[in-house]
Image (tube, rainbow over the protein chains, first blue to last red):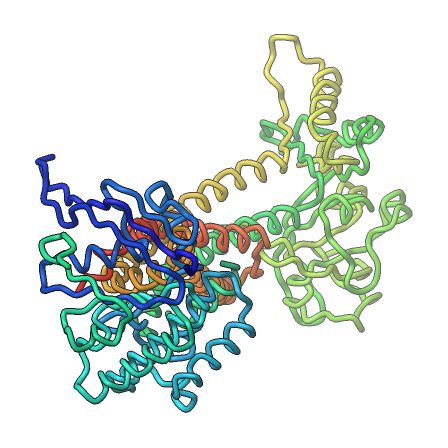
Length: 226
Length: 396
């Protein structure tokens, strides 16, 4: 049995409504294990709690109840700075809308996570360039996001997610904004990551995309359906 | 994040929005420039007044009688001057007897003040000899008919260096031109260069009878002894004039440093006032920075969310926005200093005083512009740092 990377135990997320009312449960008692090197697809329609799941897995948010252990850290007990450090070291994000820094070259975009790790400038540029080259964007390093196609922007985003060599890659609807051709390209890249032994969590409403993962869970109304 | 990294980030950001950066900086530029220029004007005025006053003579005490009798005689005498010269703390004493006479040389005639004095006069009154020589002790002791002309008087009579030793006529009596004084330029109501110096004994022999003098100029050895010497002179003169303890002084001692002190108090207040008014525009410039930084935080909410998601801590975001505000204010401050110095140099040239600025002013201008950046940059930066990454990422 390979080592566990993350473990959710009975995780509940309740959005407190204004006025101190009881609020709405977005996640209700999720329990989940993920081993290193495994790929997992979290599938569900909109409103099923996918995004909240992604925020908690990505350490952008803490669970209301339950325990979340990621790479040996008890996430629920960490303060904001410690969460930021955990994100910086452990997680690479790929978003549906790419979320690249505007008016910033592809190279600087990819190098930015290393900036927050305190890596020196020369080393940052070298590693960012290498990451872009691995994704076939070696000739696009000085282009700004507005000068790149959607598929290229998403590959820059993947390069940014990988440049820190994170234990976990979190991809939130990575093909959602792309046409089928570019989407297929991005999925090929993500499959390559799996083949290289990376741990990938893929959040999608598209069951075709989900089939490329080792394992799928289906979310419905904040619960694991199957 | 290190400071060079933060600066690189801030500069690249400002470069992408040059017009906005320039306009934001303009507020600080105008604020700092007006502070520097107005303080420069204040300091220029101060040094101008100080120079003018010290050209009257260094550590000068001027003693004059409070009343003059109908025959023109006064209570001050040459003997008083000699007695004062013997007091401790007194460096030089120059009694002055004055009269107004026609002076003729060649075909030219002018009417001017004839001052009978001693060889100490140039020292006490801060004159220097331009051509020839000053009055000598020999000339004063023997009442010789020699004259030293002020530059303006010499020009009026068309006398120059080659005329030293020639004869001129003062009040119809022949005098030998001994020298011409260097011009001092106007420092008061009277032109200090339009006068003729002759030995005091000569004036008394030919023009003014009696022993009384118009003023006695006293040069005090050091600035620190001004007050004590002033008191000693008063005591001595009261004793010599046999004044009763209840009687008022029949003379007054005028201390130039008091005037200087009063003048610098006035100009100091003026400088402070001008600088204070100008600081208001600096504050307005700071508010401009805060305004733009708040707009910037709003516009870049999504960027902040992205940065937080990929590992930035709140303090990284805080530092990024604060350094941006500081870069704006510091660049504006430096440009403002340059502009302000230019303006005050221009004003100094137009007003004809020496352009004066102190490193303290510059340091204060730069530090206050940095302070403006911190004060008006912290709040927007804190707003940015506190943003919730999830909400920020969702922000459109």
